[in-house]
Image (cartoon, rainbow, N blue to C red; front, side, top):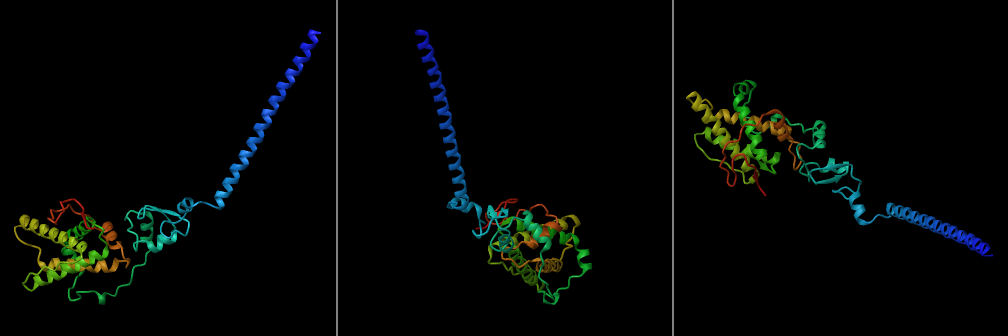
Length: 274
């Protein structure tokens, strides 16, 4: 009898254990199915009804309407291709090294300039003149580039104003007078000052080496007029455009910096104008 009871009780004990295990497994399976269903439901809802943070990260940083296609170092964020094309060098200060800017440069159509509309038409700049004053041209163009690059925030329009004021200054020297025309624009004034100092140092060095002054004021004036015409031909007309500055970078080596003595600026340090 005892054996039968033990056998009976033991059998039911095993059945009860199996039943409990089966029940636990079934409950775990049901819980897992509910959890997975809930997860996918939330993902689907998120894709159709994203919150404001998700929308912000998915839209162009400029227009906040279209999906971004590329990273823009000028705005430190992702932008759409349309904004890249329309806002480039208009509302965005594009780094010259930006791959999209450089690609646009290769396809950019510059405005047609009629040589008859050039300013200072009375000053003739011939190929022979440029060959004879090649060193002066290289020094002036390179120093113009350096002065522009060291004036943070400067654009082509600032270079244009600086060249115009320098030309007017050297025109007065032709008449035997000296009256320096300085731009009111601080960016242009900085470029004006640095280029003027660089030309002065270049002329002094030649005078020391050769024992005589071989660079006349009229020679400097002719080189400045030539650079002015180059700027007019390579200015893309954009508000923050630097196409001419890019042209200088590609075609003229930048000489060592000279001690400019510009207010608040040390040699070889950028001049920051806010």
